[in-house]
Image (tube, rainbow, N blue to C red):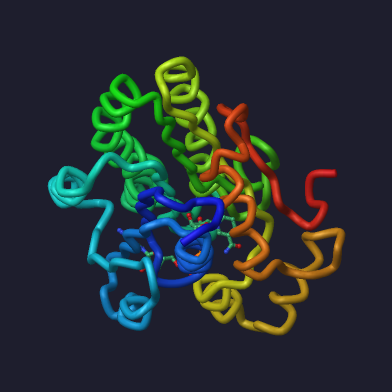
Length: 251
Ligand code: NAD
């Protein structure tokens, strides 16, 4: 099968819904063998029959499970760290528990997956010259923009960008690229949950729409092509960068 990812092996975290799912599907359509993982296996059921997709339950907060899953796979060409959680609130609303959960899921889990995946990537590069691509999910909220009620979320996503650049710098001439994407507001199930948590969901949706100068929210399928680009050899000269796809939020 042809395609920009033909012959490549990819692991996607949080592939059950939202952007992870859209990316897993587009990667498979581009010819990659995609390990689509999620903590909720029920979200993966209808991906199981898709050509080139292999589904696996994986909780990225479970270090041992992450290491075991990655150890069982061949060297990854693509690791897409998508899992993350949006805590709503200021520093005054953020308990120590909220802080730990968001930092563990949004940042620490990437440290664990990358540390597990790198040795095989490096070894294969030494043997064959093949390059691997790590793509990390950041956000406009973080070091790019400070947004209201995104205290620990923004902190964690800023850390994702730091992590991305650090990994890129250490392995820039060793066969591994590492980039991040920074979406604006994207219409995913968790966004719907966040909107519905407001006393007036219709007003809340308008507020989320208004954050983008384009006057709308993105579809997950509009973010996935950037991930495909970063996963593929089309982006062979790009590393350590943050790719914003945000409807004009950062013009
Ligand atoms: P979502 O939030 O609707 O879905 C998240 C998925 O993550 C679910 O399938 C869930 O089961 C899975 N998940 C949760 N905990 C997990 C764990 N411990 N291990 C494995 N999987 C787990 O999807 P989304 O909105 O596309 O968000 C995906 C990523 O994109 C997150 O990192 C989020 O912060 C980021 N992001 C979202 C937006 C947005 O507006 N939706 C914007 C910028 C960045």
